[in-house]
Length: 171
Image (cartoon, rainbow, N blue to C red):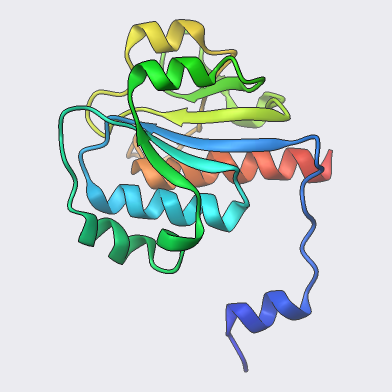
């Protein structure tokens, strides 16, 4: 049995999302370089426009990011930006969808996600600041019926990003 994913996807058509749809995957003040690499790879897997990392004061080891991102490190459009740069991007026609357990957040599986969105998740330990939560077009959470009520940020963004993809291609 061949389990090579490149061969599989070369011989099995995958539905692309419509040209009217676009997603930017973003993360706020991450402290873990491996999470950055995983998010770069996620964005590349999904066909996202880019991956953005709103940077705090921390510096990340590029070698760890590169190792985790793998092939996607050089193939995916990604960058670190400031909070001010991020706020200016919101004027580019994208709606901000935040993935956060905050007041007013709704179950992601019951919400219609915007066709053109920036999907943003907060830092591993502090989430998103209140000023960003207030400007979001949508606030969603992933339901967790099990005993653990948190997901790693790269895993949470994966679930949310592929739910966005499913909605764009299946609805």
